[in-house]
Length: 208
Image (cartoon, rainbow, N blue to C red; front, side, top):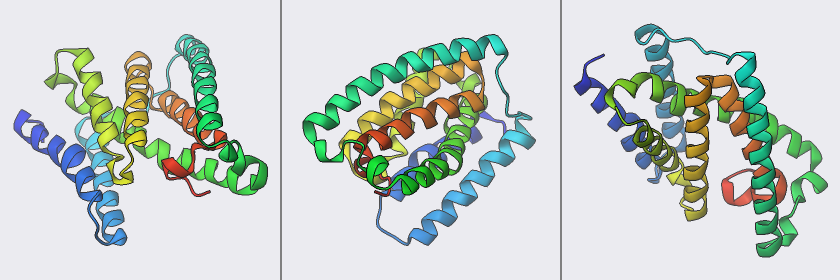
């Protein structure tokens, strides 16, 4: 399971073939079953083969992380607010204002049952499993953003593809800096929750 050939085939199946297959119309139950098996495989490889643990970054890195995350959130907040206001102002903070209980429920489910598993797969597993195959860190990060974007191809929405690519660049960079699944999950949850809150939930697959 540690040879270059095995890892290459593994990468192709997990990050290319499976996401593309999820964009094809077939049983949602089968898709969920395949996804669960894939996630359990990732956990097994991380814990038993790579001997990795979920790590929390040192306090110093946490301080830097929060400063950078807040700054990026302000920029993202301004840009996305203007985008929704100009393109679909009826959706601006719609769920927060009209369905606050649904808003809270979705944020909880999204953060713990969507974001965290995604970060284990696309950041922790990806960077720990394949780092020896790539000598160029910039290329490694760029490829991560591409496959993260590809992982959302089932939405069949070009804006989602663009946003997840940009998000992939941010999250991959954060993971490389902090080496922390927890911190990158927090960052992912903050930005994703904001997009849902500001009114972009419908286009990003959130129940509204």
